[in-house]
Image (cartoon, rainbow, N blue to C red; front, top):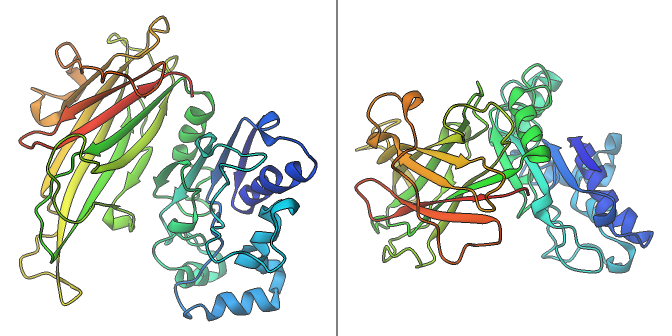
Length: 369
């Protein structure tokens, strides 16, 4: 079965997978196929004010049962009896993590976490909740606590609930639909990142993912929403295999949806790379140009839909290299060469060099997840 849950419901599902079924001697792998969570506080609920005092008061007093979002209580209902430490959670215990080992591991690649990045439209308690949790949140759950490490995830500019909430959003529905029923998984990552080495400079990437035929952005990580991709400090030697790989996005595609004359599934990845200067630990704006990126382009990727082909055909081109509008572009001459050997059976991986740069973006496609 598939489990779909919002907020605390996601922790209830994790309790079932990580504690209840293992305590009964049952393998959750036999019962649960996939887990999709909307705005779940996988790492608990923390506040942006009070220097930890509010969390301690909540956990000690247990007002309205809110201690269930604290570290001690979460350890109790997310850990099977056979692995529970009577002294409480070990220092390295991470509430967000779903164990990948032990007697009954549950692979995190079968989990998808939808993360909200809009706190301003969450008006519970007259906006007091959003103010106390801070801007890096959906108004209740902080971005850093809203995902399971190693799981698939998407960030969307929606609040925790309400009129502009995650659950009743088109972004939520499309990500859910494709994760549960998609037959192609596509990944994009930066490989061989080469950035100028400057001690006073911080590098960030902004990404937006659009799938052809949809009127929404299915994934969006930007500095304006407090969730850009942090790029590694310093330069690399620029070779594809030097280990400087930065994951950008994972999405799921359905070959049976919105077919067109190209016979492909298309998505576009808008990539912006920005530099921020620091002086004495503070941001310096002396030579700053607001909303101006050091690199700004859109990678247009087409994935083959032929079910008879075990590994999907990939084509990719940067928008700056397309003559005319993207809508009229046909993927006739930008086929990517597969890596040899492929990353896994039924999958394909290719590198698409960035324009005017020796770094590359790598795209992957695979069959039914």
